[in-house]
Image 1: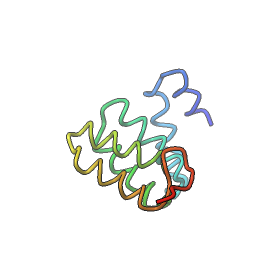
Image 2: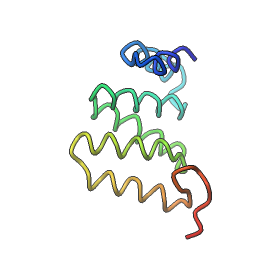
Image 3: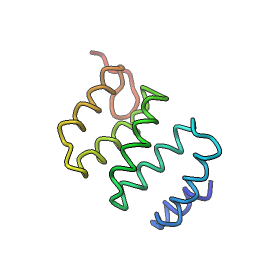
Image 4: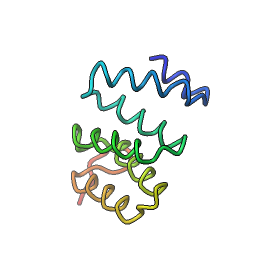
Length: 104
């Protein structure tokens, strides 16, 4: 996946169009949505990041990294209270930050 190579090399601006294309080909690809949201956050496109990350967590309600990325995007946009609710919603599904089952 070429976009991930660009992200690893810290060239987010080259990765974004590739991730956008992947989503056009498959709009229900949660990993691509998460990666695109993370990339948008890194270039301070918080509104775009929130939009795609919300879709990722709707598709996979236990997608821990998507919830964490959503929280980062919401904090970047000044929505700290919403960021906490998003992460709480993820915790309510029984996962912790590394995907193990939460004993609560």
